Image (cartoon, rainbow, N blue to C red):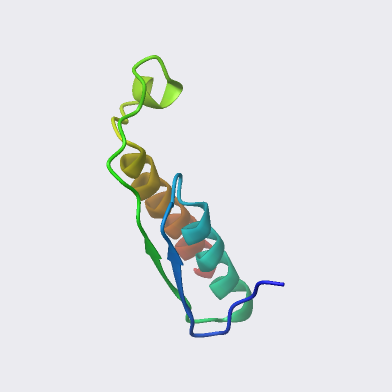
Length: 80
């Protein structure tokens, strides 16, 4: 079983699209936690024929950052 405590720091060394960051933010909202996260993603290029490339993303880390921004805004809106 894997779990975190209220003030843990979660390290995601292969963050991909940022699901771990979003999950940490949502869990903090759910239980009033103060967990922090560190996301690491190499600057891997996206294939030119992919939907992500067509949407303007050039690297996986750009997708990661955008998801974190969007999830943060959504959670912030839920708090207000």
